[in-house]
Amino acid sequence: MCIRDRGRGGLATWPPAAVATVVAALGTTAFTLLVAFVGGLWAVIRWRRDVAREQRDRYWARLTVVFDLITAAEVGRREIGRNLAQAMYDMQKVPAGEEPAARVLAELFIEKRRP
Image 1 (cartoon, rainbow, N blue to C red):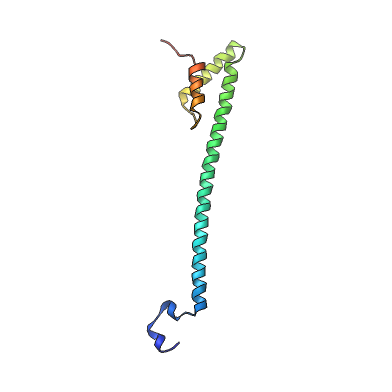
Image 2: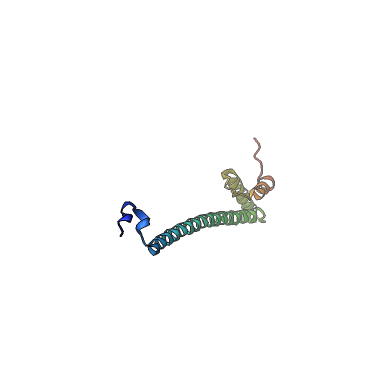
């Protein structure tokens, strides 16, 4: 170290290769953090989409069972189907995008109770 360099500190006294190494390490760290953030965001979005798909699948499975019961030849099974349809409609567990099926269920298959 020269006498002229005594007043200066920090990176000015470092060799250029060391400065380049530090800058490269900081750049790599920033890139790694960015990739980790984007990857985490992608995982959350995919998880929410999978959950929504599972909810739709369960809803359609229940709706299929209700339709099978409502259209059965036996009176008891039809009554059970209508009661299940009424319960599904009352609970309002309709996933987003499945409102038309719920409307068909309500308008065609649920008997309105008259006082």
